Amino acid sequence: MLKRRDFIAAIAVAAALPAVAPEAQEPEPLPDMILGDPDAPIEIVEYSSMTCPSCAAFHTGTLPELKTRYLDTGRAKLVFREFPLDRVALMASAIARCGGEERFFAFVDVLFRLQDRWARSENPVEAIGRIVRMAGQDPATIDACLADRALIDGILAVRLAGDNRYGIEATPTFIVNGESHSGNMSFEEFDELLRGIEGDA
Image (cartoon, rainbow, N blue to C red; front, side, top):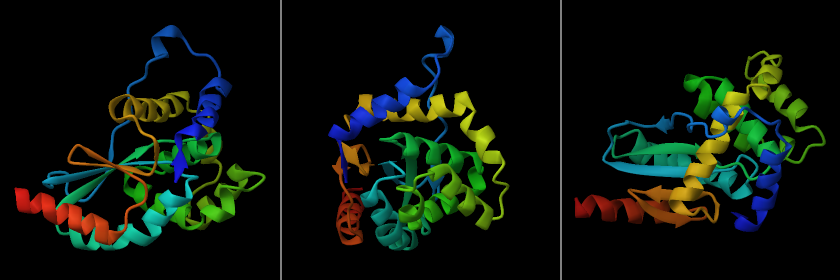
């Protein structure tokens, strides 16, 4: 679980980016990426950093059963929101967004499963490029993706909006029907929480 002390790295991310015109300094957050029925009665918002090991553990360990039991059945939906805590996570988030909405969650899943191959690499972009190539996409799109200032600003705006609204202290953080839960949760913990919400309905 990545803690708030790592925000110094996140601040460096924004500081390292080129200056923009005043009218572009407060971009709107990007559209949500939703897994499951958008009209599902329970909303699980996940704030996640692509280089966070606990986030990878959630996606590889907890999410498959959560998806089968709750998302695929229409009982809940997962709203994925980027919360990059370092420059590498920001780049990975941008590349995932560039793959398009239909491929987004599949690509995020691959990045989390192979996190140890690229997140600590000497050249993370090159390592992600190899993964992109394996997924049948053109690695040449990566440069254009990372040069898309509107996309980068949008991801940073998602992070800022989440912090302002919920005071995110660590990743992953889950906002379940408005209630914050910090840290990787097991399926059993989710199951107890979600059944409790259903029982209150």
